[in-house]
Image (cartoon, rainbow, N blue to C red; front, top):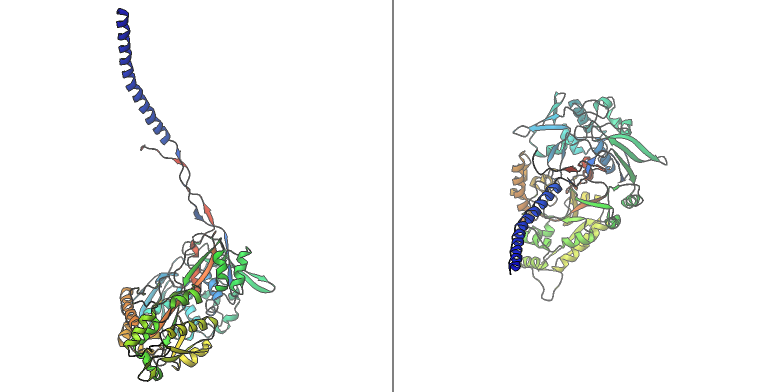
Length: 580
């Protein structure tokens, strides 16, 4: 018995010891875990290393067209020249994709309250590619060249500059005095400035043959380097980065343009690895380009409006003076079908005369979707009889709802006209089609007002300001470009006042009111805004899409941000858990 009692006591003693050790073991285990975590936190932490743009690389683009003269006074009718000149030369100002003016050679500008005086200050660090400073004298010299017979600028621009008094204030400041307020004036301050010190001895009538046109000196982000030739013809031009550019210089060190006769051959050059970009992708190459895995395709709206002009002052079609008839006609046009099928997606449905993307565009105007049933209701409201058994002609007081649509004789406009004809037939409106050359359409029909309806395009290229005065103000109905002869005093007052108002917010409000009136009355029928497509290889990074282009060369507006070379900027570093 005593032996048994001793064993029991020993067993109880062992149990007590184990209980005490269990808590100690637990404390030790927790301590080990904490220490392990602390030790792990002191190890180097891997930080993702992102690529950062770095200088270097050569970008080669297939340019559709041929080289003429690298001179901004002579490139008005040659888009290929304007593309190259866009990188070599600079204007006093430039416009962004919303049509808002931005500083360029001029670092600042201002205008008098009445909108007749504009002062411009040239950047103090702006220099020519040969190192000479840019001065007010260069700008004044360029304006004189612009007005001369030697330049290819349109006559109306030359006439406008002939009415403006240009005053030199000092080397870096100049003043423009307008005969009357004209808010779109800034459009005309984008001309490429020429170096007076190199061209002042050149007679204006000899500008077209000057050697300067083949070895230009400008102020832009890239400098002319050399011409490329093949078979005795100029096949390309090489530009190098301007190290002394007054804005942050581009990353890509060299830009090479190679000339090709059409979009298909330009795209073929990309497929052969000769170029990294294609300046223009037309429908014959677009499908293949979209299927190319290494090519990024960008599209931007062009400064054009496709529309059907309606002659509101033609006694033979007096029914077109009815607002409801015009609304019915627009409801009867399947514009989505035109854009998606005929134009292969290379357009945007238009709802008004102000271009989408512009700071003046008002998106809340009334939008007309394709609705032939609603169109026929409007026709009934106007008293037109709809035959019970169907039929293509509606009659009202003996007058048939039929007229002639004149259109350009090219394939695209012919197909669009036929689509409109078929759509209007569904609502009982019968039209005859008349195809003519585009020159004849403008000269013999629109200008003379000798038409009933006309399919045409309004082209406002190189004029970012949204001013619609020339096409819709009542004063332009006779002798001007108000081809519809729309005579609406309220709408005219809005655009008339906006033309003299320099405050953008006030102008936007006036243009908003104008667009509301236009969308209700529909003096003509807006159809589409064409778009422009181009391609850049995926290895070119930093490419941004300009949603709106006011000139084809605008696709290169942000080329200074493109890059081909990257560098590492972050390294693996330990991250302490506590502050030192």
